[in-house]
Amino acid sequence: MTERKYFEAAKTAIRNLGLKTDDVADYMDELRDSGEVNMYGASTNLSRKFGFSSEESKAIVLDYLPHGLREVPNVVPDDTTDDVQDPDEIPITVDRAELATILAALRTYQEAGYGTPVLRPARIHDIASGDDWNSLDDAGIDDLCERINCS
Image 1 (cartoon, rainbow, N blue to C red):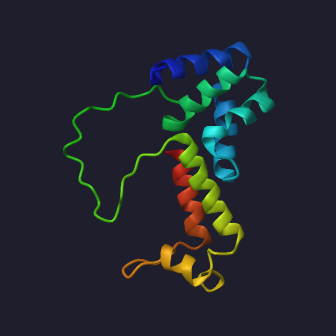
Image 2: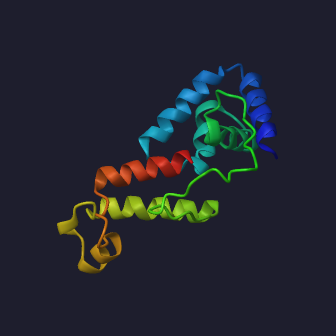
C-alpha cells in the first residue's frame, strides 16, 4: 500500500465508525507522548480503544507515523543532494522488529538505572560513552525514544 492509500484507508476507517480524525489523532499523540508504546505496535491499542479492525488500525498507524493523520501526504523529491549530512549523525536502516528491539533495549537500560552513569557497570559505560561525547541520561533516552517513535 502506498502512503496515499494508507491516508485514504485511514480516513475511510475513521469515517465508517463515525469518529473524527482529530479524536483519533489526539489519542495517537497521547500514546506517542507517553513513550510506553512502540508506535509501530500501536494498532492493537487503536483496535481496543475505537474498535477498528486489525487492517484498519495498521493503515491508521502507517498513515499517522509520517505526518500525524492531519495532513495529506506530501511527495518527497527524489533529489536530496542539497542535504548535508551532520558528521556526528550515523544513518542506519532497520526493520520494524529491529526498531522495536532498540526501543525495548533503551527502556530496559533506563529501568536498570543506567541513565545515571555511576549506576552502570564499566562495560556498559564504555559502550555508552566516548572520548568526544557524553552518554545519554534518562531525559536524553526519553527524547531519543520519542524521536524513534515519531520517525
